[in-house]
Length: 188
Image 1 (tube, rainbow, N blue to C red):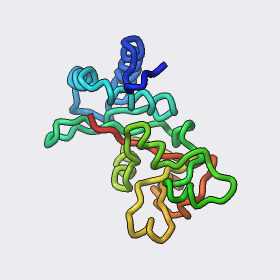
Image 2 (tube, rainbow, N blue to C red):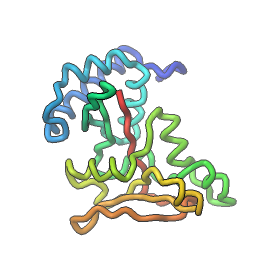
Image 3 (cartoon, rainbow, N blue to C red):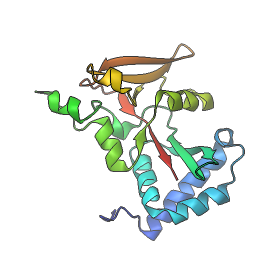
Image 4 (spheres, one colour):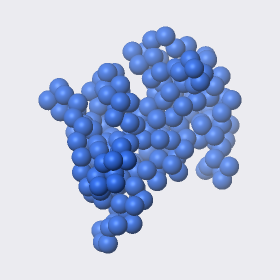
């Protein structure tokens, strides 16, 4: 079990790092110029970030390194599951949308769930970057960080991949679907 300090036990840490290393080695196309040893050093030095990665893993996100930011000296992890993470579906977009629903409220909102995990929702730009590594969301869709101008009118955006094309579209932020979740990003 996780502690309230958002820290994994040594056994959980070891198991998660083993899983992340296996995924890293299996998907070299996502991080051709990055060395695992440097990633692991960062992971070991940031136990709270490991807790967030574990949450990403538990909810079906299959987090993996997709970039290194030289400016901030951070590795960037995205959820790389083929479909939107199963443990994060059927959520409306944010707290305002959740509070606005009078009946048939979803369990949570994507923004609140991401915050509780210590991650952020992918932006449209990040979602398009993710799609360079494969075909993601061919049967599902994922909420994306919505620009304030769209959100103030009650909308929110989501992405999916159909017909060999990345689609970015909109819905009311209060809507939720069994096939729509969200993908996260974590910088370590």
